[in-house]
Image 1 (cartoon, rainbow, N blue to C red):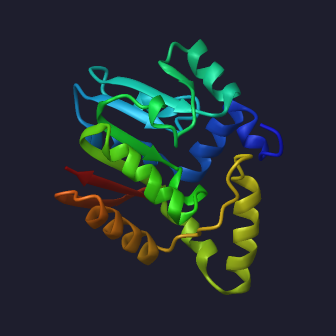
Image 2 (cartoon, helix red, strand yellow):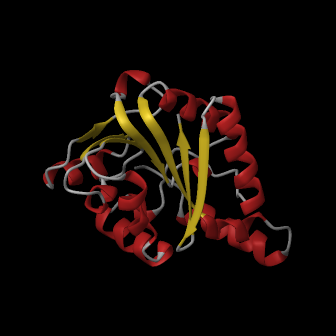
Length: 201
């Protein structure tokens, strides 16, 4: 993608970067998703989460990065090019998972994305966000430098990162999403530098 960070131009490089940054944070996905679930992932990249699901689950997703989508398709995944804000690209699923996407978006777009997801998820929405980015939310010199580095390294070519969430601001956002969309329950876990949130209908 034109103007994007180098990791978004190479699926293999992106995979390596994710492993280095997130220290196995995806290993919790099996437990959170469960068995025999139909899973849909907006902003799926090349479908890296698929291998962390139980074999009994079905998986599909959309992303605007055609290079990533083509890479995933070559590996047999049911993913396709599509804009996450276009409801026509969604399919009704047991679970919709939003992984590593919220911190790329404006607050207004986060609200819009979750609202769309509520129309297609039958059981719950799962959010995975890297908790370590909170270091960039501070006001000190180190935080400001971290914010600049993270913004360049994690620029996807479309969304300029504006929100660096602390754990406090993450919790505030998640509580807002729960109340605004009438979820009956919410569960938040921290695992290997990841914030995993289950918004249950």
